[in-house]
Image 1 (tube, rainbow, N blue to C red):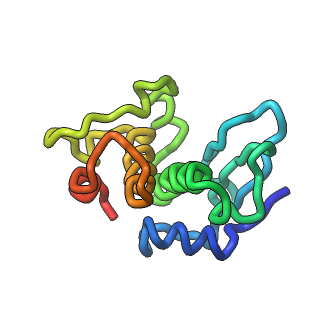
Image 2: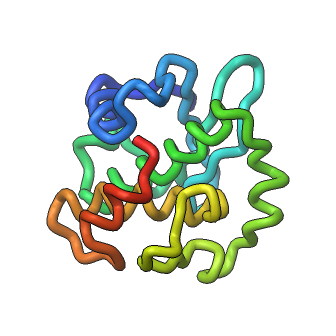
Length: 149
């Protein structure tokens, strides 16, 4: 199954990205088992794609748990990165996929441009979670300083 972003998902994206993210070209497709994690394979045929696991597929992820919404935000950061001209395959190979690929420091030395693609996505995801009351590594002042939108 392939679908566009639901209206609630577009609203959710706008609440995080403002107008920095083009949402009309984004498509979600259902990943077959055994895939358990959402991922963005990149752009193809003028569209940006998010693969979403069958086990957590929903018609509107904005109506799902905060954790699922945060995962969507994380994947939308990768879409935004691709829209900015980042080659996601090369950037992912550089970043890696272990826990350290996603971890970031919250000190004054941390700047957006120094973060890899997974750290950037985690920072935006965590800002979203923090804004909704969840416990995350940084405080809102950190996320306000580091996030580009």
